[in-house]
Image 1 (cartoon, rainbow, N blue to C red):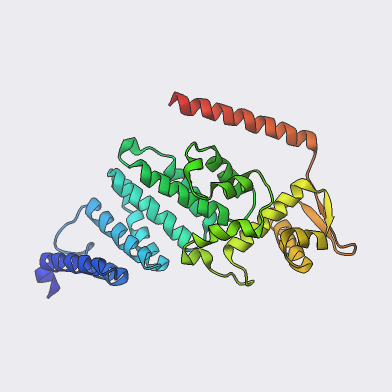
Image 2: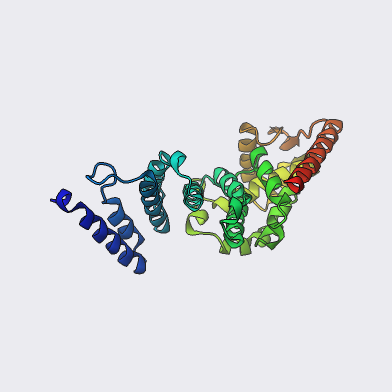
Length: 299
């Protein structure tokens, strides 16, 4: 019985998992660790030991692009993390959670998590290179996230980071933050750096990146024009007018774009709002940004 040799079973499975990891067989390595009885065995294991194993299993499943299995063990670890004081393990758990959101193509939530982690110091326990890599992940997910107010807030946070210029593809991020049009030729290099799950095709036949850039360009157009003909919008987006109308209509329905489409005349009207109110909002945003900068310097 395994119960009679619980400790030996534990050691053998750990060693076997290391062998599979050396062979880059991530799924089998995760299954070896997952088969260890951590909850009801005769040996009492601490919350730290159990959380470390659950996070490790989740990381191995993520290496194999199995976000569903990784999520199962990340959830188990989440129930123990409130008892954990180990900073590196807390960081591994939070990164694991962000990677799961990334793998599930929840790019807005993933960008928020990556951004939050990358802007913390952890009392110098985490090297700057790792934090810079997390910032790069935040940039990638922010670019892939659906256009709208929530993404705009994340873009603003990332653009204010002093390290952003050292991150690859920060030019596209800056263009998105400044709400400038992005041409398809500009995103080809960025597309080459994406992970396989980030290149996935959605139900409407376009990639996540194509959808994100198209939606961004609709928002950028709304900042420049008060209204425009649908064929002209299609020309601007480099897509057929019917597709341009469909994209804009969906964004309006989801309240990520303010305006309306007059199908009879074939014109889309962008409601930019009252200019004086917009100028007042910009002043408030500028003051808040300066206050935030002062607080960071004081800390």
